[in-house]
Image (cartoon, rainbow, N blue to C red):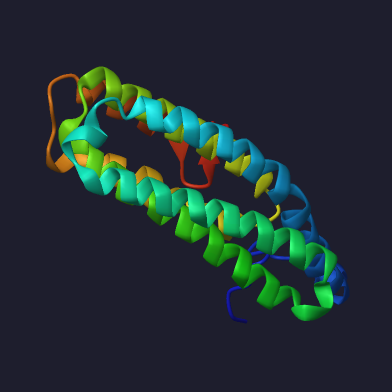
Amino acid sequence: MPLDLISPLPLAVEDEPFRQRLHVELVNDLYARAKAALLSLMVVLFVLWHVLGEAPDHQPWIGRIYFALTLVVVVRFAMYSYLERNQAKVPLPKDRHMLFMLGTFMVGIGYAGLNIAAYPFLSTAEFGMLIACITGINAGALLSMSASPSSYIAYMAPSIGTLLLLAWIRPKPGYGLILIVLLLVVRPFGVGRAP
């Protein structure tokens, strides 16, 4: 059986007849939670801009990436609101899920771009604040995307993965402790998951 991206966890044999209904409900839950999460994300993006400190003054791409990321969030909000009201436009849960997952991945890529562009210009304190901000964003995303672990991973992997990779490849003084804290907080399927 191919991997089920909507619900990759196996179903009990007796629950298998309910798989399609489960998919519909899980995708509906994703879309219902997305609107509030995206509105909250707009506020967090404002905070994130300030966390970047003076880095945008040194690297003009940061402002462009930030604008593109904000635009993606606004478009996602509009698209999800529309599709929640007009499910007949994209009737199959699998297709609606793929649209959702694509949107979450694009936001994750936006964070990755910000991380890459800003990293060389961040002080240790700013880098620590960036990690705290991105980790907090991912904690909220874990809650809003709890219906689809694959969507959360598509969101989390680029944003947190680039922070880990950058700090590992090009370490700066004080970043080791920040990385240890991040590694303790981030687990394979979420932020703060119990061992």
